[in-house]
Length: 296
Ligand code: ZN
Image (cartoon, rainbow, N blue to C red; front, side, top):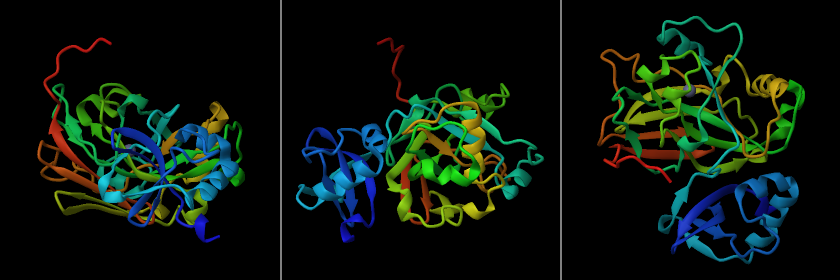
């Protein structure tokens, strides 16, 4: 069973290629040529326990690379859906001057906003009111519909850290919040996907955000208003959830726009978010590069 502990699945770049890997202490096990391990994260999640068993078998013989020598990438680069919930911690509801919603307020982050755990966050040319939100991300592992709350954890593959980066003026331009939540690079995720069996109590994890080394958020997932199971239940009432879908479960108090004076992300800043047991992501903030119209 020793090989099953610390199942941290990663995608990483090393020596010019992108690979699926398993993080072990300060090394990454390269699963690229590892027998019957699926080739990509969506395939691996879809394979469920069989996929993880293949990983465990392959891990003993597969080559290893020092963690410091690789670039970690978003564990799920193109989730089918990237959902999030608003106003889900009482202290955050208070700091925004809102009322706790009667029904969970879900919104979409467009999946093209997904970026890696250490990649830059852009301050877009369209706005400089860019804010951070440290969150626990849930990754779905099974295709499912109408999942009752008491079975919700059966469909969760694992967890990762999310920064639900938000552009505050665009966020309030429409009730859907979609535009302000979806700028490219505004979905940092990682640093890897920790499988659900490693996290005994996902609703009792400390979650902290630092801006330039200063602690700005210090919450605990035990303070969620709508728990993980209920979120899965509500969402799957409406649509099919699929392996690789990400649900970002809300942010505790301490976001930038409610501080006085308000704090927004600026080029040169560094945002670090750590969730207990899942590791930390740390993204530098840069100006959106001066590219012109892009039409592929
Ligand atoms: Zn959020």
